Structures are given as structure tokens and as C-alpha cells.
Amino acid sequence: MRFSLPTLALSLLSISSLATADITSALATTTAEIADPTPAAVGAAPGAGLFGYSYSGCYNETTGYANAGGVRAINTGSMISNNSQTTESCLTFCKGNNYQYCGIEYGRECWGGTYISSLSKKLDESNCSIGCGGNNTEICGGRLTLSLYNMSKESGSSGSSSSGGEKGAGVKEVAGAVGAVLLAGAMGAAFSLF
Image (spheres, rainbow, N blue to C red):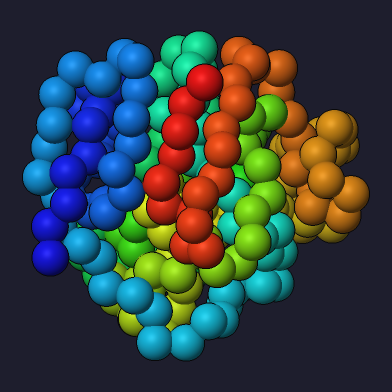
């Protein structure tokens, strides 16, 4: 099954092969055909406690927001992508780079960084349902959603205290552009931008 995905710019979205949602934006410039990823066989978020990271939940990506300026949910650091991604391989990458936050998206993208955008909010777990490319019994995010992990302070991370995020989520928010998104459908795959 294939779906259309209007994009702000392929270089901004960094989407190489996976998505199913129709995303509309006043800034849309092109349409890309993208393959449907494999859903996870079970609904587990493994890796809690691995390398000092704890699972924070399922968070939305921010690239499709109006006025976001192409800022990603994890907007500092770097990303690796491979078809054999697992939670452990992503957390290993993030730990090796001393990243406070580690997020897995589309079953194959591993994002690591020091901060998370204030535009990224915790969603219902059903929005993160794509199995990891290297182990489809693990959850590795979703379509424009991240399975987000946070380094605990006891593990010696360089991040500072949380502020502004949902209580207990351990998410440090960075002041960012103001945007609004309406999440539609049980799987939350279609976004309307204001």
C-alpha cells in the first residue's frame, strides 16, 4: 500500500522511505510516494533502564508545524538510520554521544540530542506502533512520532533539570515557534496545520 505525503522540503523532513499520513501544509512544495512501514507485533517499549535511559512515552515530531522553521522534536544532535534498527542499537548510539534524549521514529530512524522542542508533546501510546526494523516485536516510534527515551540524572548525563513538560515525563522544553496541530483519528496519522 502506498500513500502520498506532501512535504515542506525533503531536506527538512529527512524522510527517506516511510510514512502513511496525508500531511497538508501551506508551505507544501512537493509530493513524495513513500512505502507503508510494518506495524509492531507487540506493544512493548523495551529499553527502559538500558544505559541509564528511561522510556518517556510517545511524542509527536514537529517538522510539519506552521512556523516551526524545520525544527525537529529532538532539535540538537544527530540522526542515524538503518533498516535493522533496534531500541538497543539506538540507545547505544545516543549513550555513545552522551545525548540526553533519544528517540526512535519510523522503525528505523534514531535521533539523539540535548533538547526536545516545546512543540513536541506526549501522545497516546497507540500513535507509536511501528516495529523496529531489526526486531519488529519492539516499538520504534510511528509516522511522525517518536518513542522517546530520557537519560536519568543518576546516569551522569549532561542535561539539566526538566521544565515546562508534562509532570514525570522528564522532558526539557526549548522555547520554539508557536504552532498548533489537531490530531485526527485513533492512530493519529493525519495532521491539520493552522
